[in-house]
Structure formats: structure tokens, C-alpha cells
Length: 550
Ligand code: N01
Image (cartoon, rainbow, N blue to C red; front, side, top):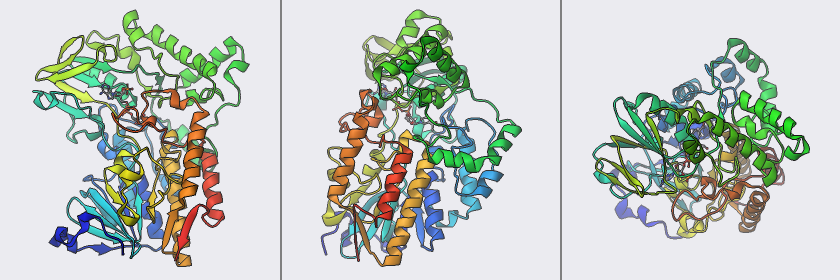
């Protein structure tokens, strides 16, 4: 037997830890992915425990309670498809669901499918070590519990590890500060306050108009100007909802056959194949309809820089005509990256917010933040008095949540070392050297480039079928073959390089938002449908690229 990780030496094992429990699978995380994984594995007759750090289920939707938090995908398809009864009975109220509504939906799912009895809340998994001799994972939580199982599935989310900038002086700030991804459950009152928001990604762009409406004064600290499309949110009319419910089979089929897991196709027209007037009319219609579908207006927006420039220019013109102060409009105009090479936000009155007298925009690329003082924030250009600071500064995306756990595979090798140069996986599902560990929406899978529930269901279904196959065949161990992994990593890089996506220098897709993180384009950009086909082929070929051993 190879040596175990030091965390699991006998001396470390407390009385609580000794009461370790054996199950067939441990799942980490009780968000969209963990809940469905539990449902499927339990359905195939396995004993399962889900270990969840939060005091409630819901993952992203448990933690992200910031003002204005809602989903950028539409409610009718940002939802599970696995149960027709569920999708028929649940009533969404708006085109884009608010955070409390999604959280209520996930709680309903947990109750409806009797999931809670196998979920342990308030336990953060700190370590997971593969026992080479026993072909089992030993999992440790911060409460000292130990669990042991042949299979370990991470359902930790791609955007769950908050990125809080290390700004000197933050500890000595006299006011309150918050990160949007760790929002207090009791809420935050901004009434009468001078508030600073750092960050203008999807989160900041949702929160800024809502905070501006409540605060005495809002100062937005912007590092990179962003393209944003109007969401055009509104109530879902009963007739519209009924229509969706009647057509769910077709909607779900369409979702599974597209590039992004949305129920619409990217246009086959290229942007420069139409006249300027035709192109403007297409963009204008997409702008009026609102939402992420804007980027589906033409086939080549993410592959041809000239095509993309037409979309980028269209949005720049909308900013110029919306924002009254020309200097502020120019500061808000993105010029350093093509549209949609960073995840495009959608908004409700974002650019209009800068027409308010009580909102100030500060360019912290031109004049970087130097320090937080007891009374505010100092940039190279001056000091801003603040009572409250909101960090909408995003996440250590995709790898952060996994590397936050001390994961050790065969021979005690750490995931941190395996990924020192950036994440390497086979299909985003497994990492060579870490047998029987499955990573739902892991790096190297389409995940964040898609509608997440669609990708989550595909991964969970594939993993469930795989584990059922292994158990039927008496296979104790499945492990990605290093050569297959290398080939997948090369393919992932090649596919990304054929797009404009790596051109956004500060994108979290590249890890560029976290100082010191390796710059690697992490998600798989080859499209959801093509990816699914590859996963199915691999399974049909007897799990090609994986080593199976009895
Ligand atoms: O995070 P982000 P987010 N000093 O990383 C800035 C999903 N999401 O939470 O661009 C100053 O996109 C940073 O500047 P820069 C969605 O996939 C989904 O907004 O790095 N500024 C940027 O402006 C999204 O893409 C929904 O130069 C600093 C901002 O902070 C993902 O979550 C809703 C800084 C961070 O933007 C992440 O979005 C909301 C510093 N030190 C979000 N560090 C749904 O609808 C960072 N910034 C499902």
C-alpha cells in the first residue's frame, strides 16, 4: 500500500473522525449539480452522501444574494429537464429568475425527490485522499468527519471561490465591506450610505443599478469597461408559460443539440455577408429582444475579428447614445477586447445609471486602486469617502473550488502539483492519476460557455452510466490514461485558439483575473453538442481513453 497523505495519519484522527462512514459515493456540493448527482446515483441503487459547506442547499444560489442577483439565462430553460412532472408543476414568474426564486426551486427539488436525508450541511470538505490499496477515497471535512467511498464526485461549481483583491488597508476599513458571492443572509442596507462597488462584470452590472437606487451616493471603480446587452426582463405571462410547458420536449431536444445549451441556434449567416443596413437591423432586433441571444446574431462573431467588430461597434454606439456625459460614456466604452470574448453581461438600466447625479465612475485602470483607508478608497488619482465597499470582483474560476480541497491521488500526488501549469483533464470529467474521481463541469468541459443546468445534466447522466457500468462489470478502478488526457488538453487548446475567446486579456476564462494563476483557456470551446457526441462515443467504445481495472 502506498503512503497516505499526512492529514490521515493515526495521530490526526480525532474521535469524531474515527466514526467514519462507508458509502458507495461521496458527492461534494449541493447545488444544481450535487442535487441531481445524488438523485441519479441513489436511483441506481447506491448509498450516497452529499457534503455541503453552506448551511443550506443551492450552491451558487445559496451564496450569491447580492442586490439584483438573477440568472442571465431564461427561467424556462435554466432548470432541470430530467423530470417532466417537475417542469410541468413549477411556475416561474419572470423571464429571468431572481436568486430567491431559483433557491426556492432548488429547495422544492430537494423536497420533491426526498434528497435531504443524504445531504450533510455545514461541512466543508478540506481533503480527499485516494487509498491506492483499497481503491477508495477518504474524505475529510472541517467538522472532523471522515467518509470513505469507492467513488468521489465533485459538484463544487465553477464560480464558487470568491476572488477578494488583496488591497492594502482593507482590514483597517471603518465601514463594512462585502463580496457579492458571500452575501449576508440578512441583507445589507445602503440607505444613507456612500457605497463603492469594485468590478463591472456580470455581477457588478446587475448590482450597480439596484444599489444606486438605494444608496446616498455610489462610486463605481471600473478596471475594464464591459459590453452589456439589455435583459428586457419582465413577468412571464401565463399563456407564455403554458406554451413553454406544452413544448418542453422540443425545447429540451433543441437545447441538447446546440453550441451553448440554449434553445436557439446561432445564425448561419456571417456578419459581413449582409449589407450594413441589414446587419444593423439584425442587431437592432436582437437588442430589442434582449438577452444573451444577441451573440447568436451571426455565425462568426467569435471567430472573425472584423465580424466581431461590427457587433462591438453597435454596442459602443448604444452606450454613446444612452450615457449623457460624453466623458463618462467614453470611460464606459470597451475597446480593449472583442465583444463576448469575456462572458457578456446582460443588464437592466446599467448604462442609464451613470446619468444619475449620485453615481460617480472611477477608472481604476488609468488610476489604480492603491489602498483602502479607514474612511474610503484611494486611487492614484485621489481619495473617495465610503461607508460601504462591495467587491463584485468575481471568482477564482473553475480550478479555485477544486484546488481549495487538498486532493491527493495515486502515490499521494496532489492535484495542485498536477495542475501547476493550469488544469489538465480528460473531457473535463477526470484527471489522470486521480482514479474514481469525477469532476462535474470540470475545466476542459463546455461548462461556463453553456447554460449550466444543461451541461450539468449531461455530465451527471454520463457519470451515472459510467459508474453503473463499472459496478456491473466488477471494475474497481477507472482512471484517465495520460496520453488521452494530453490529447484532450491539446484539442481544447486548439479549439480555443481557433476562436477570438483567448483575446480578452483580463478574462476569468483564462485565469487572468487572479494574480499568479496560470493563463490557460479553461473551458472547452468546441460546443455542447459536439462535446456530448464525443463523450457518448467514448462510452460506447468501452470508455476509450480510460484505464479500467478489476
Ligand atoms: O466576475 P467577473 P462576476 N481591482 O470576474 C473587476 C457568472 N454570473 O462575478 O475585467 C479592480 O466577470 C474585474 O475587472 P477586470 C458569469 O459567468 C452569472 O461579475 O478583471 N477591479 C471585473 O470588472 C460571470 O461571467 C450570472 O479588469 C477588479 C470584475 O471585477 C461570472 O459569474 C450572474 C479587481 C469581476 O468580473 C463572474 O461574474 C452573475 C481589482 N483588484 C455572474 N479584481 C448569471 O446570470 C477584479 N476586478 C447566472
